[in-house]
Length: 345
Ligand code: UT7
Image (cartoon, rainbow, N blue to C red; front, side, top):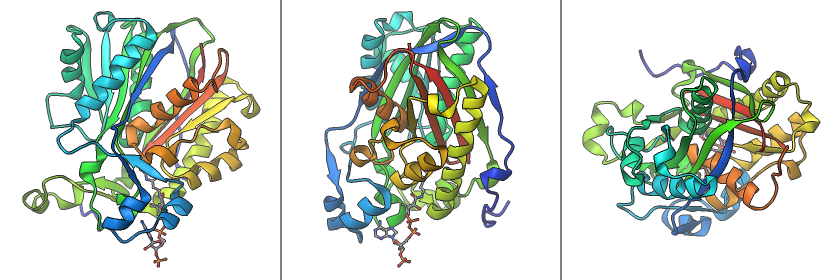
């Protein structure tokens, strides 16, 4: 099929699927994060490409991002975040039944990063695989982990979102090179009492929008010989509109499914793609910004790592307490989307 037709469907024409959690509940028992030490500011980018700190800050809210040094693997970032999450949850790798890694920037087609982490952490026997739903990968992986715990096929699950996107950037593409960054975040899920932990979900995909955000697809065949890495490409303004709409609709879907009113949500942790997307959606959902976790200024868009990076920071800063209703929501290439309402334990 030719990759030429622009994606026109707006998310309000999409049927959304939402579910109240059934079976045994699960919750986040501990989290860990890792970002590479190297910080690249907007001013650093001004020196290598045609852009400005003013444009990036005003149009995206990003001031800096962390870039892995050349040769650093996604596995290294993921393993550091995973080790911290195990410590925070008070379990060892031997306790793990399952390891799920959401990533769009694996170090190679196979073996999976999940299996490599399994080796690094010494957790043989756990079922382990990688999941690709672009920036929604962490929510998709959480929902899979929750399903295994709900059906009593697993007790302790390690979920990781990890990316080294800096190796997929082309500094002649202003719409993407200034946006993305590297990082990793991890969560350990364990069984939770009924009425606590993950309460509801809304997940979906619309492949008609596959050309909205791509990496490699458009260069199939010819590209491989020319470039060492696939390069991210994006139809930014179209994705912006989709993102605002889907954030709003998902928030209502998961709140309704969990029978929680919008003003009972204590914290919204959105995928950190653009501060203007978050701000526009928060206003229309009716959430004041003091109930929204935002750290895009520090990390940029780290795709599958962005939600755990923002959630862990909010937890560490004391913005989440037991019993709080926390809304996690993402969207990304595919197109994909996913949200969940979580009562913190
Ligand atoms: O997680 C993956 C999903 N992706 C997203 O969520 C991205 C959603 N989209 C966005 O965040 C925004 O669309 C962008 C940040 C990518 C772009 O912002 P925008 O406000 O939509 O800008 P635009 O693409 O409409 O471009 C506006 C102007 C253009 O100049 P002219 O034609 O008006 O003269 C661009 O050439 O801004 C120019 N421009 C830049 N200028 C300086 C675009 N990128 C840059 C840049 N620096 N980096």
